[in-house]
Image 1 (cartoon, rainbow, N blue to C red):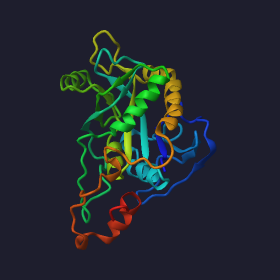
Image 2: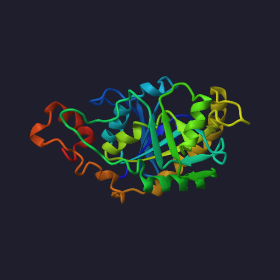
Image 3: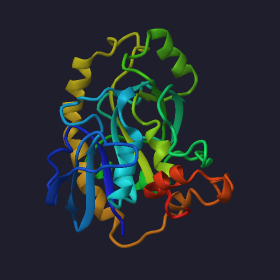
Image 4: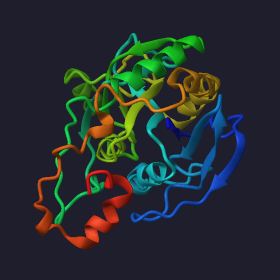
Length: 286
């Protein structure tokens, strides 16, 4: 059955879920960022995870992404929509606009990027790092909510927590990146390994630091735009369940079969302890 998971922050804490309850989840990769708010919207099971924890306690580099994705999978999620704040490298992608991302460039380091490893190796495809079906439905829901929506854009994920230098900002822009943030990766990688449909809606808060006519980004400016965007994010989330529909809907892009042929380690050579740890996210093929 379709089960929508939302990962985000401001504007989503007060979703009017039926039978709402905060649930603590333990995973083989530890506890997620926070308890997970579960309930139903338009008859569809929905789970909401505060990526940085309630009160924004967790820095980008310290987000327990493996535990977050595993917890959502263990609760039955099939579709994961991430809503995050970003800076823009494009004049036309202005503060207040939403970008439905379709590409990534990973400039993070030191973040565990896979559930798999020595003892059970897997290689999934990230040619399309997001699910086109879920991305399209999210874009439609955002447009219906009255947002200015850009369909498509490359998300540069930096380590942070500092914002980019002016040189870096100009360099990323020259490489063809469209927006910059600190949270999409390894989240998207792990969602693919967990065979979840995943999409990111990026809320533009600033022009990073490349724009000569705009002030360099600071937290006060980001928070001001985030507050203005909160209602759009909430309306987007409220409009998505009815578009997804209940029942079983196999992904036409095979996100739910991403591990078919991906595990390269011979069955007899697999580490039993790692296999046991992997079962909550990869049990279908193990």
